[in-house]
Image (cartoon, rainbow, N blue to C red; front, side):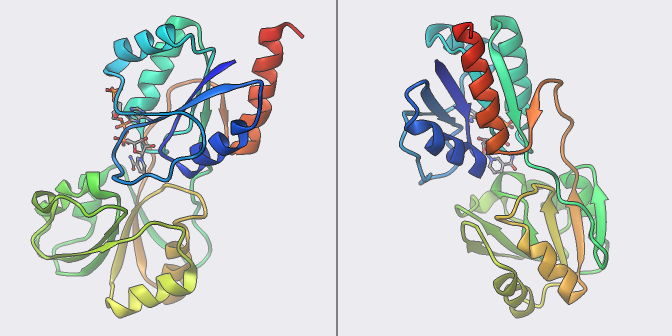
Length: 251
Ligand code: NAP
């Protein structure tokens, strides 16, 4: 069964590794190409956009893809919408793998906002020291709040033109642990954290560290989801693939 995994998340890589040795599937992992040196699992990979819905429809037909697993990041809204539309048009089975969002725990001081511009505004007028972990594609709105000092962490260094004026960069790839996150927050005298509600364990330790240190967190809520079948993890995706494969064979 020809399978397309839309990647860019730890779940996509884990699923790709799991199906790599499974003779029932001929998988391809697709990446947008945002990370300079992605860690690639042992299956064929393609890199770069498809060219919108029309491009994805053409790809699904040309490659005779029977099933698509959308395991993009929870904030990859465009790709998720395109996948839903293209799979509907071509009659391709589609599954969304979406890890649960982080939820507020006792002791958390969270302010949930709808988007990145609202996050920048929520920092307030008085200068603060901000730990910004929103990914390097989403820094532009913080130029509108230049009074703050930003410590920005991303996998690859952000383009200089996207940075707010007072910024220092930490290039690092998760997973991160709580003790190291607490040390980082203390060392940089951070007053407030800004993050997307990505969910998952790899980058969740900063929230536990914030709770321990009594620091506030501005958290950007997830974008709305297109309708469709959804599972929270790789085990759910495996079970779905088993079912789709069995249905295709008529057993
Ligand atoms: P997006 O806004 O939903 O997608 C923008 C465009 O990038 C899509 O329309 C598509 O281009 C292309 N694209 C996205 N994911 C793709 C994939 N897996 N394979 C091929 N093309 C893809 O997504 P994004 O926020 O730019 O994220 C891009 C990638 O980074 C995704 O793979 C995502 O999983 C990963 N990522 C995102 C975040 C985040 O916070 N957004 C964080 C970590 C990792 P065409 O229309 O030309 O097909």
